[in-house]
Image 1: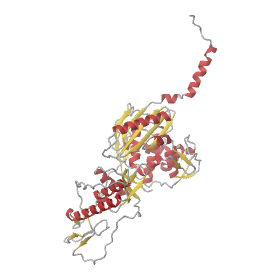
Image 2 (image 1 turned 120 degrees about the vertical axis):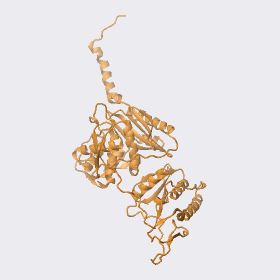
Image 3 (image 1 turned 180 degrees about the vertical axis):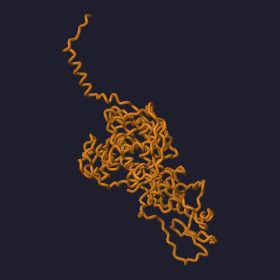
Image 4 (image 1 turned 90 degrees about the horizontal axis):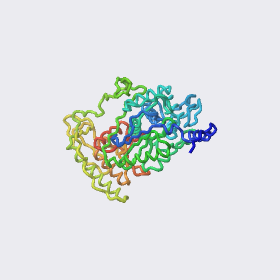
Length: 504
């Protein structure tokens, strides 16, 4: 068979088809590298990793750090959620996705937070950065300091929104670490990432990944990201019972294929993670914002190939005073004196469980005796003379703690005032969550058991069961932030799951 040479005109259809293929299949999607990580959120154990330390474009996953720094600034009094932020020309000119802010417009910080978390609005991210640090560049430097303090050793931020910029890179491992910090360091704000719609002040906005929230059982966030250079990225978290898994994907080829891969990774995570695990929440990084105390120099480790190790300045987070007050002389009640009170409280809890069982379908189970504290603390009462004799008096019915009568006390006797619940005024707007349970009775029971096991730090806190879509949350409310943090640390030391619950 004789071959024929094609004339230039005969190549026209082939060239036309090739051009259309370039239009239909973006080169960026095909070129975006793939990376993934799966982690047990409770203890940080890595369950799966692929190219997890490869530096790639994070896209809008960046906004997790932007919002983390905003939450930190609010907590430390740099700004409030009701602060009116003036939108700059730079912020208003950011590329989509955006809220549609105008230069000179004033808008409350809370609306910018919602727009960034739910819609992934770039103009909102830049406006927040400028409001807190004066410029986006200064804010990015703060993001980098915070990332280094978290252990995100292969991440460099150049902006607050995540649009492609030279040197703006991260890894699947670092973004998984960041997602875990968002969950545990600011649980009071974490619900933002699971809202399917939100009021952003100027309009309602919809979540960028409602599909996954609707399709995957237990999914509650966290953040999507897409640029041509990055592909389709996602850091997702899901909770089932006492298990929580985080899965991260870089370089997905489409929203649908990325979500399908994330669901596979979450399934793998739940399969590999044990039903029960000791909670080891990540240590929050030191506060590195305005007014951040003393500064020390720390050297980074594991520098990138071809670069020098460098020093960064981080704020010292050393504790300068003990949170535990010292007992006054002669004011210590021995464990023998406290035993009748504890026994009486135990009987009251048994009675309460019986009352709860009367309106519950679940029969109460016996309450186990609390494990002895390895380092029992003395109970401190009002100061009395060293020679005074202190005897416990039987607790009246319905009173949370027995009163103590002091002999040889020169002050006249008066009627004791008993407080059974702390007021929520005076800054007592915090609380703690000790788990989610399938029934109200189960939640009430764990609250009573926990109250008995940790009477010192939970004394006066009100017990509250909140019904949600997937169960009943067991909360202690009416606490200050310090008392809630202390109670959580003590409960975690007893291997009891605990999260702080913020105001509102």
